[in-house]
Image 1 (tube, rainbow, N blue to C red):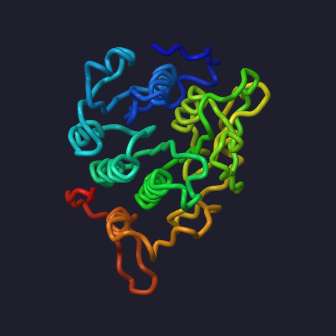
Image 2 (image 1 turned 90 degrees about the vertical axis):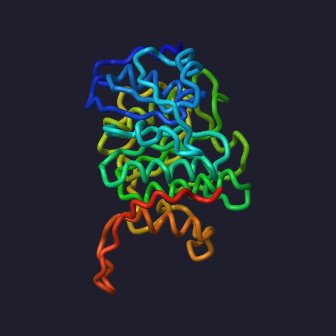
Length: 284
């Protein structure tokens, strides 16, 4: 089992919630589960193989067998959760987009804090389907109207031992597709994702995440507070370039965004747009 570093009282036992871990058996997800339990949260994990999950995750976790790509188990997994932390891997179209759409449909209009691990450089169009579909997954989260925190970490576990200081930043286009964009440890990513659960300052914000030379911060709230919130009227975060226009998007994506859009009144027509509860599955 993973063992977290010691935490001060100020960094634990704050605003405990029931949290669903998506991707909880992955290399970052296992740290998320460990950090969440250490912080006093109740953890539910949606897993494809319960026996395998029990071998790598603490016994305190409640397991729900299911699959994001088929929808199996999702309704049970999201029941009564107050937050979701997603550290997803695999086919981004099926998991980051299709799986997240199924989760959001299952949540319906309950208020849930969505904490998402995306990827640095996700708005760099032309680097393949992985980043493009992760970006579309981000768009679903923003369109849903739920509280959200989206972290875009740099390259995993390539930092030196003195890279302990977390750097959350916005507005830079780090698109080299090499570790030059910045590096960060898996446990450091998990600490930020779990820290967002108890920080109101993290909500509505998207940021890149790397580690720099220096000591680890005792508190994350000041790092979240220094960030600018996304514009709730737009699909992307405030510094993303307009290089994937909604007008050119797949019909599947546009339908999903319209389905999930927060109820609001169209000022031109006076028509309220609501959340559809369609059970139709996204195209694969």
